[in-house]
Image (cartoon, rainbow, N blue to C red; front, side):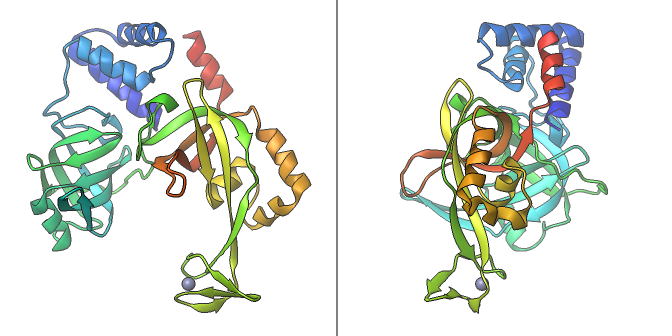
Length: 319
Ligand SMILES: [Zn+2]
């Protein structure tokens, strides 16, 4: 899905610049070569667009075409999820923020509302899950769509039936990743630490406290615990290294086991075997950067892991 977004973007640049695709792609490759590959394709494409004097202000785009740095863009999309409005306090500033997940037939994107008028529409249920909305003059920051006071959000007359739920995550290099960035990175596993295990409530997934041999949920009292594991690794992409954190789903994907098999990791030999398989392996990781609450260091919380398609990489290199 990232590829689709990128390719549409290249096409858009080519069309607006009156050049053909190959010329734009050559400029992008040259830009990346000049920066020793330290910039993503998308990043290089934006630099090339800017150099050609193209801006995407006031344009109506598809969700898959949204790229960080775009301002005053318009999209029509369906609300897949409207999350509860949150209050925040930053220094002496207090305010509200609403987040939603919207999608059209090309991709989905996290959308953040900062304006009190827009937030009220969510609170009053005027816009809610399932609504098709027309968003105007929004900006794209770190792969999210942001609506401020100059933006608008209105119920659209359009109908969107088939939405694509895959999120567009931008490819990034680790050196460029900042707190709260959601991104896709290609990196090598350079260290794997022993997993930690904990018990959660099967009903509400909250952590349980152990009293003797009973496990207690603060809501559901004594329950039969579900075991979860957390595994930390260090990943490196040549620009930076960071601790990557894997929970149930992403952990199972990382070491190719089924969810019910997570306890197998308690076996030291099994863990060692998996660890040795992982060390030196290069993979794609989708996730979000955050600061570890306990230690204050940055970490990348992995939501998805995928294998690198060697053929795709070779094709790219041959270009
Ligand atoms: Zn519970």
